Image (cartoon, rainbow, N blue to C red; front, side, top):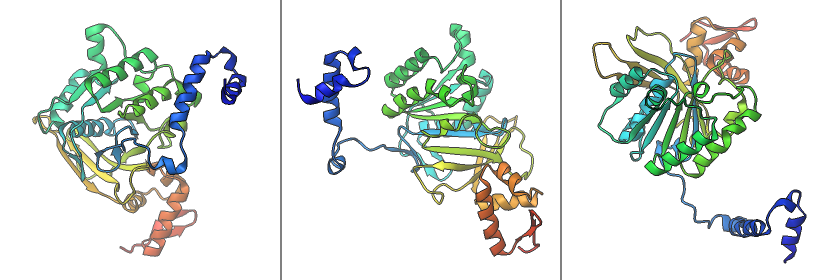
Length: 340
């Protein structure tokens, strides 16, 4: 037995580990550990982009916002376009990917109606696991905290070659987890990492808290490649049936803010029409900041909460506005100067 094996035997808990298992792990480590010069030569395929440059294989992303703001509209639109090979705003889908949309909240009729409304091309690549349909057909209830259900979904994704998994939403699909308990997320994180290792991208839909930030422990955000926040858009007319909101990245490991500016989305589906009208426009964070000032939100703390950014970020926006000449200090608040 070599000296390294002797040291391994002396490690805490090693006495209960079979010798052949220890030896196997020594072999695995010998294959995987390399020098810094060897790291560049490792033959591991790079993650392929799915949408633009910000959404890639194996990503974990979050879309969050207040109730009723339009999270499901955006998630369904993104899923349909990934399956069809279309585009989301200016971002092109590089090639069609098979998508599984897991719904734990909406009525079956509503999901069915929105899927038809957002379809732009026939596709066999968009799949649904819908909680109402599952219960009607099997009597089972979805709970993605259950390791058996997690394993089954992973296996199904591998069998059907599903590359994008959208989970709508966190509070409905993951029962029994205390939202603010960081350690409780350990019931889910290993499964998400296993999906990542199998190059399956995951998007989780979540709710915002009263402070405007994503509800629950911040530990959920650690493994995320990107996070999109939805906020209210300035009212510019009535939408009969749909949503209007501003979507902006509050975390993005894959691309810069210049590549992913805030977007104002309009989803409008008149009741007498089958298809939804989807439109968008670019909007800068500075524009959003000015809109809130014009709407009477003038305190740094309130602006921070409404925009979902830190007070320091608000101060930086204010400093630029001072220099541009349209903003001034009014005691502890901000005020418009009257200049354009």
